[in-house]
Image (cartoon, rainbow over all chains, first blue to last red; front, side, top):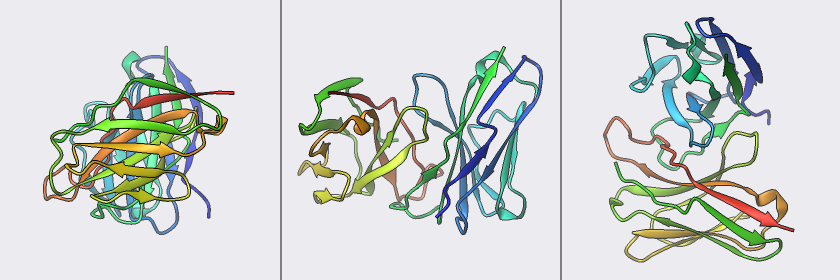
Length: 116
Length: 114
């Protein structure tokens, strides 16, 4: 079974530029998550989708971050304009359903962003 | 939200058992205890979860204290591949906005010595 696919793996940009990350979840997984992981910290949830609807985006900095999940499958996370503090690994995860407390989350390898 | 407390780091010799502790003194009756681990340069991966009883799977065992205020992840024979950051997470099946989500702390960095 194919895992969660993310691209690009690495991206270096200058501050105030824009960047987009793409995620393809495991086939059939209704729930998709984007996490931000700053070096030395645990992942922090940015946004959670159920199919193509947003379940929780309370920690997404909406002045510069946006995310969409068209057709309930692939998702894109965009940052515009980027700041130095956005340097982090952006992790995408998927699960079969959101409201299953024992449901396993499957993570991709992440996209590492460096903002100069 | 219920929080967990884990040591920042631990060391183990290869092929010896490892006991990774987690304190969760404010756990509620509806919180499940989940463990994930993150190998270097990879995303987190599921290890095990439990509610009240001890649990075993092919990767590890989870021992839960009778009062549920602490738990221990047990790796029976540590290998070099087990070197990772281990996260102990409480997952609530309640009705709040944070229900069912995984909220990560800093975890315990496990080093395995050959």
